[in-house]
Image: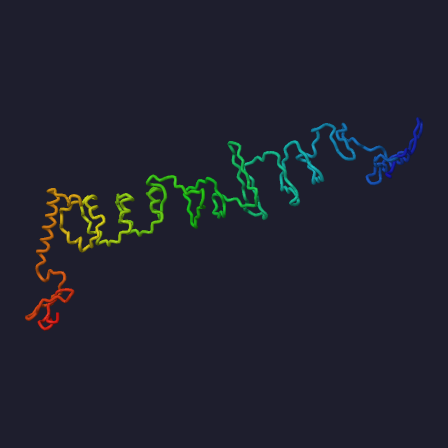
Length: 365
């Protein structure tokens, strides 16, 4: 229990007061208010009542759990000149006004602590130092937005890709992207199914290029090449061809050589005239007998008695006769093998062809 104050004497009118009386009285006062052993005013017996109100006009009220101002928003705690040193709070700190803090700020002591912001962060940028304090920082620039803008971060552990960096995107899906002048350095696979590689522009200047050369063919024209195994030289044969598919199919199965087909080069006969040969079983040698004939009519005209048919038949006969008349020498006979003739040689037939032999040899044939 702290020291209490007891009156040392009692004075009455006419009493003689000496110095010892005052000394004893003051000593009791000093003992009662000593900082370590003096009166505590803790409310216990002999210590006096608890002091719960402080200030010239009792501006502060003190209780066992709070220190409260007499009037709300009326008392400052320190000033710009006289400041408290350290402050420690084990609970929440609530401030209705602005907080200005000059110096380093540490928020939280471990990963379970949280920072909750229910207001707008104002400023032109946020600067991050990183784990090591050095001369390099990362600045997150905040634009002065002209409308409400929402930037949503991915709900996954990820790395953000910037437009000024070179990064590799693996198995990413881009929905309706616009790529301006992309350069693809690796293999590109387009999934089968309901996916298309569409070249929107095909104006003769812009479009699909192969090896830097613009492809001017249409999709229909390119589809004609589906499954074609021909070489470039073979395809060039068709350059300028205007035949229909049905007309080209006439050649299906043809085994003639190029030389044989070239026989038709320059032929001016009509399709009806050429159709006369349809079903002909003559050999090439037999057909070659007609080489030079310029008047041929169809089968019906050949069997008629018209002047035209007769003239045609006569023309053929005259041509054949002329051909026979010209083959009137041994050299022109196609079934002879005549060596250099000499005296006493005879012309004999050996069962296969005509040959020249001596008289003795010829007797055996």
